[in-house]
Length: 109
Image (cartoon, rainbow, N blue to C red; front, side, top):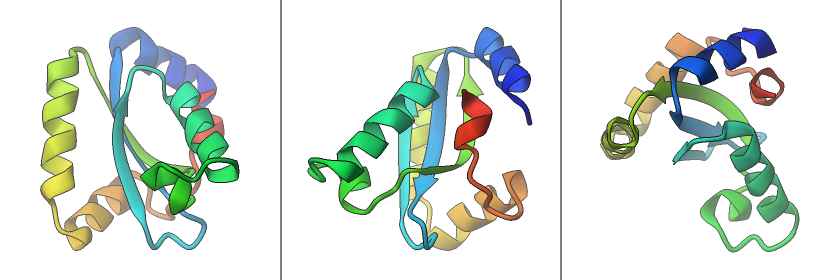
């Protein structure tokens, strides 16, 4: 997927559920945002400075999964659903979307 594809998604959807991970792919963070790039920048800043947030403490700055929603209520519902899943099910979701678990940060600029 390219930056133009993300722009297309942005035109269709205003809210996103996303999953980030650490360099070793051992910890997952699930969140919701209306601006993925800004949110990734916040996670990066936290990991470099305060480390007070979960994502900052565990260095979850690598985007590996996202999906878009038109309405915030839908995104919130999906985020809650994903957070309840066991790790194996989350891994399968990510692998289906991103088979090699490549870092997608540069694709959402």
